[in-house]
Length: 166
Image (tube, rainbow, N blue to C red; front, top):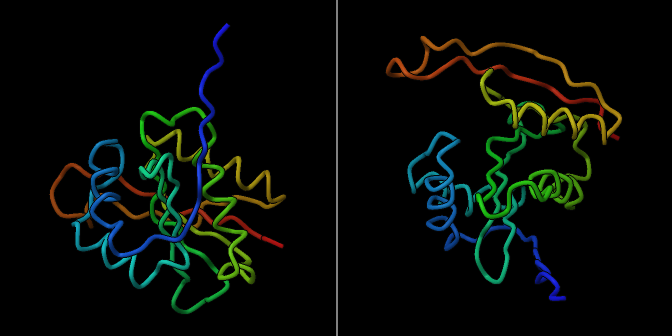
C-alpha cells in the first residue's frame, strides 16, 4: 500500500515579489474579483502585516488580504481569501484566517469586517465558521448595491461584521 504524499503548507507575510503570483492565483481560480497586478504589489508592500500567503513546495496556493480600518484600528477588514483549486476542501481558507489573527499585528483586533456577494455561499460559510470558532456573532451591517459598481455585471455585496473577538 502506497501512502499519499504529505502536503507541507507554510504561512508567511507576502513580499512585493509575491504580487505577480498572487495576481495569477486570483486569475486562475476565477471566483474573486481580479484587481490589477499593481493592487497586489501594493498590498504586499504596504499591507503585508495584515496579509498572509500559504505555500506548498514554494508555490503560493493561498492568500488572504486585509487591512486595519483607517478610523477604527481594532477592526480588520478582510478583502480577499483565495485558495488554489488544487487545495480546495483541505481547510486552507480557514487556516489562513486563523493564522492571520494569530499574527502580532492582529493581537488587538476586536472585530472583522468583510463583504460577500449573495451568490458566494462558500465565502459566507467560511466566515460563519470563523465566527463560530471565535465564539463571536456575525451580523450583516450594510449593503453595497450593484448600481454603484461600474458596468452592469456586479451583484450587490453584503458587509458583515464578526465580533467580539477576544
